[in-house]
Image 1 (cartoon, helix red, strand yellow):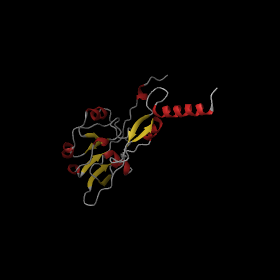
Image 2 (image 1 turned 135 degrees about the vertical axis):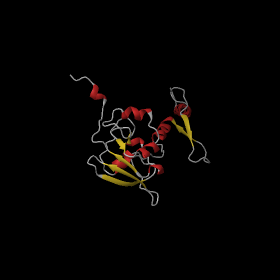
Image 3 (image 1 turned 180 degrees about the horizontal axis):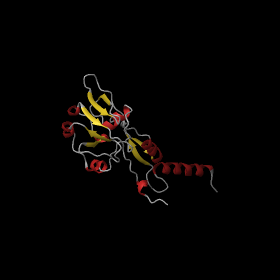
Image 4 (image 1 turned 30 degrees about the vertical axis):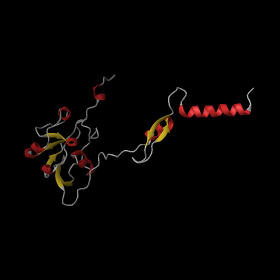
Length: 190
């Protein structure tokens, strides 16, 4: 029969061993971190370490948002909509045409969210000199452009055209319609 003293010693040994080993013989104190580079290491249990991973912070990337141009650093792009109306917009360097159009409520869908996986942000560059200043389209962009409605020699995807100082004054036309092909369009109908 166990005495209170032997039970207390047993719990003490169990408590000490549970701090260092889990049921499977792996160390419970498996992760360490520092708050600052000069602070001492802090050891975490597996449960705490998984919480730390879930609540980590990283810089957020603002996808789909344009930045207002700083005074004196404005670049201008003109969109010609389906009705022929021109919209001249002041934009910042680094913004792409899809985000600019959507921020100004122009009819450009961007169904894939700017990931170059559709052709709904198709634009036609009106001046061939500006077209030559835009970097060459990637293979992915060319594949998507093959699906675009009203393809021309100066067609590009708006999500892939990033405004630079060389493109200041760019004029693009929105096609009369877009084509959004999905895998479900090709499935057999019963």
